[in-house]
Image (cartoon, rainbow, N blue to C red; front, side):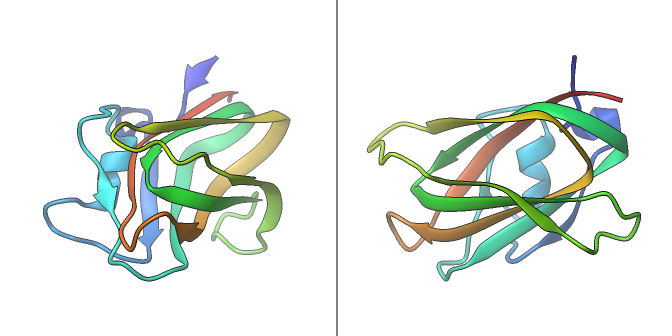
Length: 136
């Protein structure tokens, strides 16, 4: 198993609903929990990851703050179209520390993953790290 959600693995953030030059969306794939992407305060918020190759994904872990509801969708197309829902979860509110949520995907195949934050516990949310375990 590899962590495919890293810049060093060739993964890219190809879309984000918001961006701040101090907290860019690429921070979610830099492998560090200390850096983060922050939303602009409206919902929904989303970002899309493109992997270097199509993956067979077993587990996705998201480290975030103030996220309440998140939906995950996948695409196997080369141009990030035709997404289908694969997971949805309400996160527990963890005042003062990061949320860590796992999504077991049992070998789901994807070229792109879209993360849609539909609501938060505050106006602003942050995503610190996304880990995607899988096989190329």
